[in-house]
Each structure stands twice: as structure tokens, then as C-alpha cells.
Image 1 (cartoon, rainbow, N blue to C red):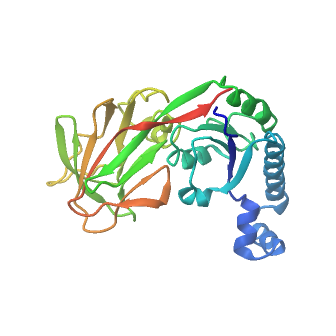
Image 2 (cartoon, one colour):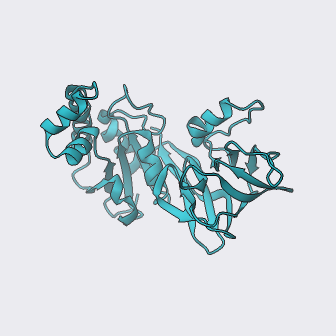
Image 3 (cartoon, one colour):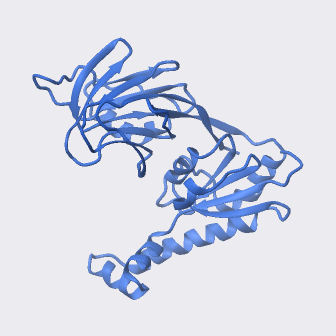
Length: 299
């Protein structure tokens, strides 16, 4: 680390309790809503308290000489990250994926506030470990895993990064129409869209699709320089085929998709539909490995 004091950027998202109160106006209204659907406010409050306790524990362990910032997930796209930042994501695994696309090599510490509800693949550390982790980062001794990311680039220069997967399709439930090229194979298709996943995404959406296939694809490891793609429910017709359903994209190879949708075509990453690219008729998209990597602190 340089002589400039690091800045700890603590990223979190609203808890279910906070979302319910914001939607219904008061805690009692939220209680009525939950009880009318067979749920208890007590359970939601307990999860909220665990999250708040985790945040407090993390904040109390940031060194006094460090600068600090608090950031909600909804503000990630507007926040300017600096080279001296250390990102501390307190929440579920998806929070790390949400932040990854806005970073440029800064270390990320994933804190799991509720192991009973969050798998902890990207947030493996308990809140009490935050102090020790920040100390080894400051000393330059942190063990860091460089996780591969995907890049989706339109022919007009717009680019979207993804830690888990890129989705290409129609924003509604109607069929997506496009021309697909993978290596030396190409095909016109009509489907429910397709995803291009990294090794990190191989534990999520890609895994669900892969388990349903008659001919499974070997999903890559998080650090492996390759991607995998899956076409969702391709439809056979006189004009569309189903020969290219899945495959691996090694380093240096890209998947090329040309839209044949008059409107409603979209490209988004890691499940965040609000941060999307429009994919209208004739637009060309290429998806491959990104230069950027997520630097996830392991210990």
C-alpha cells in the first residue's frame, strides 16, 4: 500500500425489514403484511439485527488512520472508486458481483453477516475477521484470488462487465431472435435467451442449466481463463435451429450474437436488469473474457 491512507469502502444493501418498512410505511404495516402471508416479523427483525451487528463489528475494526465511506448497492454505479480503496462487502454473495464491475483491481473483502442464509462463496469471512484482514492487506501480505470476469461489447462501443454471467435476450417472456456464431459454427435461433458464464457463475445460474442438459459441459474454475455459454430453450423451426446449444469459450475466443429483435432486446450482467444495454435489430454483440479481474481477499 502507498503512503496515502487507504479508504475502506463498506458496501451493503437494504435488509428485508428496511425494504418492507419503506414499501408499507411503518413497522406495524409491515407486520400485518407478513402475517397475512403466513410469515412472522420476528424472523425478519432477527435477520436485520444480525446484519446491523455485522456492520457495526466491521466498522469498529477499520483502523483509525484509514479513511472510510459507506455505500448502498444502489449507489455503486455513481460512486468513484480510488486506487487506494479496499472494498468491504457486508451481505450476500451477489453484493460482491454487483460491485466487481465498477472496480479496477482494488481488493475486495467479503463479510458474511448471516451464514444460515448466505452461502458465503464470495463472502467467506465472519465480521470479527475484518480487522485482521485489513491488517494483512495494509502489509501487502493478503492472499488474493483473481477471479475471471466476462465482457460484453456492442458494436457502438458500449461495454458491460460481469462476474457471474451475461444474459442476452428479450426483456419480456417472448422469444428472443438472433444470429449466433461460436468459433466456425453459426446459426439463426429463437430461444428464451442465452447466458455466458464465468467460473464464478458456474455455482449459480449456469449450474442450474448444466444439470438439466443431456450432455453436460465441464464448467470452469473461478480463475480459469475460459467462459461457458448456454442457450435457453432453443426452438426448432423452418427458420431457426438448435444445433448450437452450449459450449466453452477459451481465452481469445468470443461468442458473437447479432440481434433480430425489432424492440425489447437487452443485455445485462449478474441479474441487474436496470444496468442494461439495449440490443435492437442489427446490433452486433461480442462476449469474451474481460481484462479486468475481481481481486477477492481469501486471508
